[in-house]
Image 1: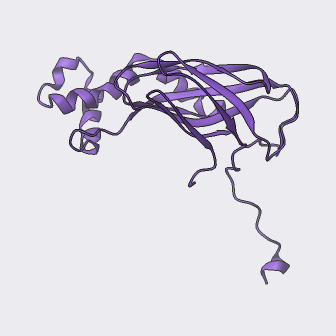
Image 2: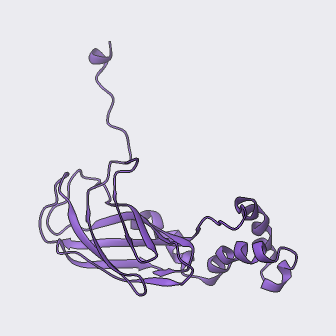
Image 3: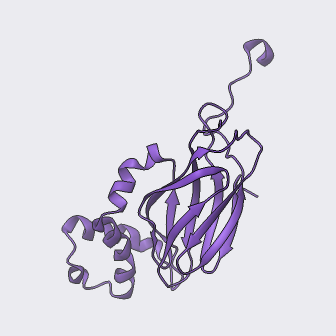
Length: 196
């Protein structure tokens, strides 16, 4: 596969590139917190919601951010430090109305004033309209969420998979074995003597 993570489908929900984020220290020890990274896509027309996440490898699992998953929309799950500003804004209504704006502009492009959106939002609608081609519309990214396995029950070395269960209000439940993701930075360069 072109991605490091696992994938799974349950109902109309697709989970892609599902991994435990690479640890900054190089390994996870018992008691550490381990964030997940993945993309959750609702390919159906019915709204859904991530109601719970659990794993036998952690004492509990924290969900930080907006867990709602509108129909034909995507939710990006990121490491908490990266998501703090955007997860706070994803829980607010302006971003939600922004993500629904392209749908209304596709069906009726002439009356943008009906949405009651400020001028800054109506300016963003034309930029997203060209991405729509025909009746097939790519899922809109509606925000970010952080999922963190807290207080790991045992050491988690690189190469070991972790079972994690995701529960959705409409789609149901799915358990995936998650690998630890690849580091974000490249490996250190070889020594000068080796390069020569």
